[in-house]
Image (tube, rainbow, N blue to C red; front, side):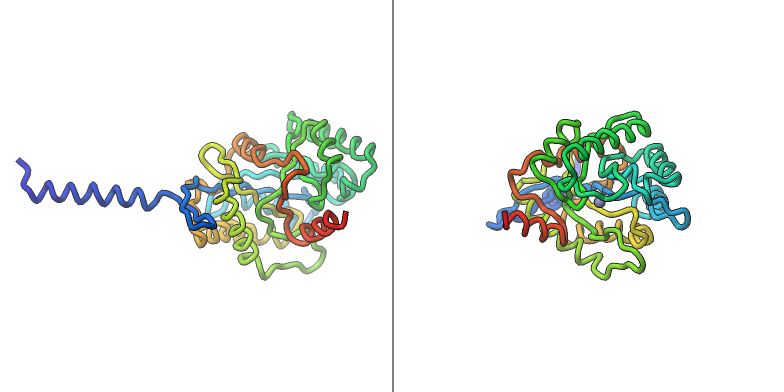
Length: 301
Ligand SMILES: [Zn+2]
């Protein structure tokens, strides 16, 4: 017969484990102070404007190496919104090689441009946009064997007409939750505000989580983050950015998935498709300067 002491011991262990399981249930506060349980977030990394055509210290190449091998999570997979015919990037031999490498290493290729320059889709003539969509989709089919399903508009600029063109070509538009605001900067480039910038944007995402406006996919909340793989500063600091994302999520007490970053192309695409925007209804977050500019333009119409 177990002694009374043993029974008490088991009772205490049971109560403690019950309490600890309650305290680890992720919750987020609404504006009214109500605590809502939320699923763990998972960072969905995206890169715009690449690949780089640089033959020396290629930033796209460096980013691929860091995603594959870093101290936080190995073999991270990302979505690359590429410019297949850019004169300084995808249109060069180096760029074409990198497009093939992106696909071979399990990343997801998506449409950004198929013109020589980083053209605003809203400013192209309708027939120019149509032709660039045909060309870009064919380029990506040649590389991966699959038609792309995702598009990100250059300068985050879109309207009802460009959205309808995307839809006719089977493309869905993905914007972003967080942006490193890194862009393509020639010459000296750096960012003093890497951490505070991502912290402030993730704080906004936390309030959106409380309102339930971000869907859950396979048990996680995909949080879309945007970088530019043509930016040499971003390339040099990719591991730092990965660390900052984890740190700011912890600082905001957001639960993080066991694998904080996507590492499977199929799951990555499924999560991204769940976050796409299909109409002009509703206010979408546009990061940095472009949010201010397009907001200004919309307000002036
Ligand atoms: Zn771009």
